[in-house]
Image: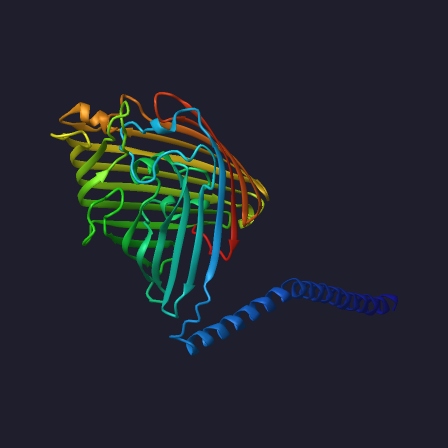
Length: 445
């Protein structure tokens, strides 16, 4: 009898305890759901508001298509610096390379550096336009230059974009960036030797982004070829390029991009190098006529903990270039008959750099440059006079920077170079500020 009474009691107790446990588990799940709603509810609401705003903007754009209220984005880049060098600026050279364009060292002492005025806007729902005026100090005078002036298609479809006007070529990686975006105060030596710091020309560009999981971009450019390192041609196509970029993410912390590119000019006419005068005589200028082609490889890798680069990140960047040329080199200003040599040029080089952001407002970087050349000609004296004889020397340089970044709009940089470009090693120092005023677009990968 006692056993028959005990069994129902035990069963009732177990039954009630299961309900207690079930209620407790349900309450726990309910609390977790409430926590999730609190944490992500605001984010979802923000996304919904942004989606609604975007839809409204699209409707407004379609309604006002064809109208242009001219409400451009205007930005100013202020760049100033103090530059110190041990060697004579007038005697600067890269043995094996005939310098041209804006190649060379910055102004010694205080200067405005490379400041910019940028105006850009959507012309309508089909086109975007941009113009950039650059201001630099040269030989104690401030010069203004039309650096960019181009239009670009919007929403062309199928991954296609067409750009026309004056713009930075997409040969290589760094060449596409404005100077204030660089991680160092000066251009890599190979850019200085091949492009006169940067390759800018007038023409048209077409790019196509493939509908693939990995980023894949193919492109080509047709240029007038009137600017260094082509020179001479102003009617028709004087230079052209093809390029390809592929990249992607590895997890949420790692990303990479690999690029290859080719630049070619089949009829370079009177490409002038750096002029020089010996013993106060008349200035002599090396001039190249012939064919020129450049091949390039670039690699970029980035790391950020948990995909957030604001406090810590690492950026590695590598580029390698090779140029081959055939033609004639003439020394202009040397009197009649002109000094001349047949020229078979082979120049190569590159750089590798790493930038480490170790705190929210601080980062440091290291860069190594190295060049090499194997130029041949029918007159060794003319090659040497044109700066195309490497004199048995391979230019190289070591650079280190420390930067304070109070915000995304301001930067103070201290940089030291140990420059072994020539036989006399030069210790160089830069103290630079860069400030961005007004609207400024997003930067590339």
